[in-house]
Length: 348
Image (spheres, rainbow, N blue to C red):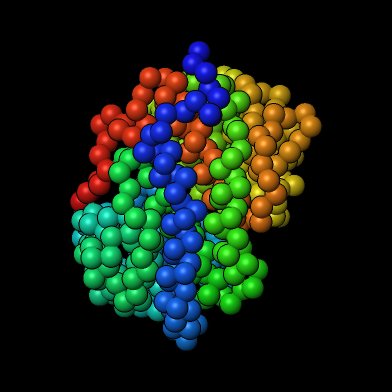
């Protein structure tokens, strides 16, 4: 087996870009504060009935994080729209009184653009979180908030995903006027810098020979589980599936009849007690169970500093990007250029 110590990792683009996320988010906070403040005022005046999100891949996972922030701090029902309803089936939906949040790195995917045009025509107020500010999506939006992730060359998105989560946190912090979220937002860059130094090569040693992986999260951490599973698929060719830890108990738990690694992501909010209870139960069946974001004496727990619940998904994902790169390299793969994939995916 290759040496999995993180000090010997090649300087891949994926690792470089994941590490850059803290600086990109610092830029985002300083450059976008006035725009977020003004948008927060507009949205409070608008008093929308609901929030609709739209994105593909990592962008849709980021939308899960936004959904929990909106529902927890604003009390607004939030749902992810299916882009193909408009782009493939040609069906329009009534979105009067809704806020429609379109999330994209490139801002060019035809199905996302079709869904956004339809939402705007149907009466929605369109907000775009996009990295390319001169993209068609940015031009369509009533408000465009640049991610400031900069150029991302690795096919596997890292800093653009983390910047999308940071933008989501800023959006809800200004909209809800939450002092707690505002403080979390300002702590983000420093938290990511601290977290980057954590050595999780122990997990990489487990996964380098694995065929399957289950990734569990709950509440605001579900988005992190979704993104981590995708990255292990993309970069390592590892069959990884994400589940809500609650949904996992409604059927998928039967998968553990065949022992396989389970990675459980936690944050110190109202979900933590349930997650730790489930971790004790699953520890008997998983091979092994690994906790990230919390600690139990009887369960393998990765070293992690105690960050705020809204911050924890970002620091866990950033650290797990590093693990994915380690595993890919140990398997003889290039995490920057996964087979069959390209950087910009355009679907109809």
